[in-house]
Amino acid sequence: MTNPVMEALISAKVSGLIDPPRSWGHAERVAWLQLPRELQIFYAKREAERDRAVRNSQNEAGELRRRLAAAEARIAELEKPNNVQPASADPLKTQPKEIEDGIHKDTAA
Image 1 (tube, helix red, strand yellow):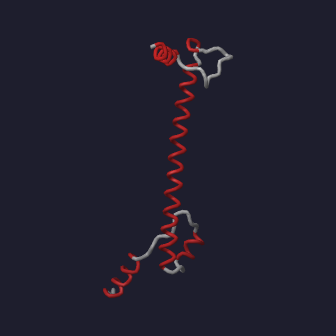
Image 2: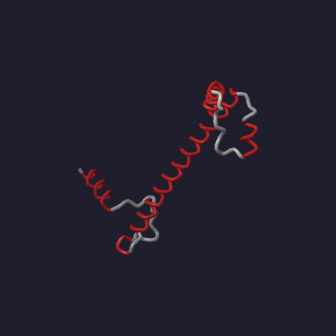
Image 3: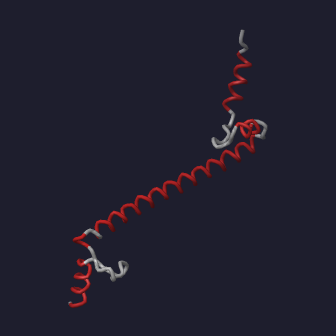
């Protein structure tokens, strides 16, 4: 026979539990249950902030990797035989022909 009052108390207690951070191991999870609720709230909030920062950094790194791959692909395209520039040319100072034409047109006017 179940006691409805006891079930309600247990349900209320379980619903009020704060999950320990996902990165914590078994020993830390056991210790988590011994922490006062205020510390659980503090640690849970801090770990969530840390997790968000890590995810943001991972997303940023992924975006930078994609941009680097696109830039490398563009460089490889420009280095194909029809687009090869003189070896002595500084690639940072060399501009595509279209840009040079635009600059000369602007200065000639």
